[in-house]
Amino acid sequence: MDISFDVGTSCFNVRTCAVMLCGENLLVMKDKKLPYAYLPGGRVKLNETAQQALIRELQEEIGIQAVIERPLWVTQAFFTEAASQRRFHEICFYFLVSLRKSSLLRSMNSFSRWEGQIEHRFEWVAFNELSHLNFQPEFVKTHVRTLPDHVELILDQN
Image (cartoon, rainbow, N blue to C red; front, side, top):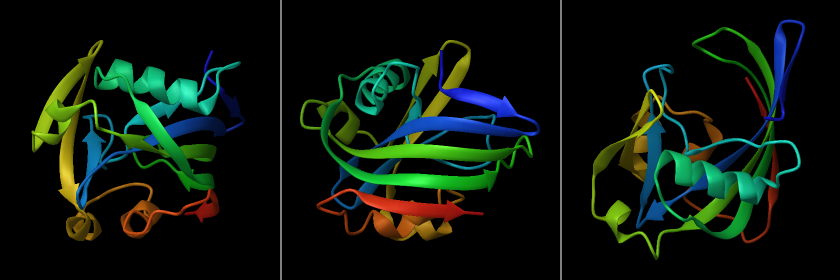
């Protein structure tokens, strides 16, 4: 069971995301449900750590066995989701994920994977192109250039 529940017209989520780099390129994903690109990852299940959830999600979405290097950010986000117009309160854990054992990912500019009936499109985007991309959350566009050595807590309000 995902740690996600509705409270009135709002939703609370606990998520986890992967920051995967190849030089100065970030792996982002897109699907037809959402008008913006985002990082691979997903919701954390009850009695599952954020790290376990990320490893599971990357296996489901990309088909890789993730190697988590370190945590980067924890966000407290308050936003209205563009597609559904629902208000969200979300806690998200961001981890740097190593691609040392996944040379296939580094060798492609873009690729698609199916997760059930949903097609996920993945693309390597150069850091300097992120500012022109409809990408969420916004803070990643600048923070990815200088990754922290220790976990940073970020308040993200839209």
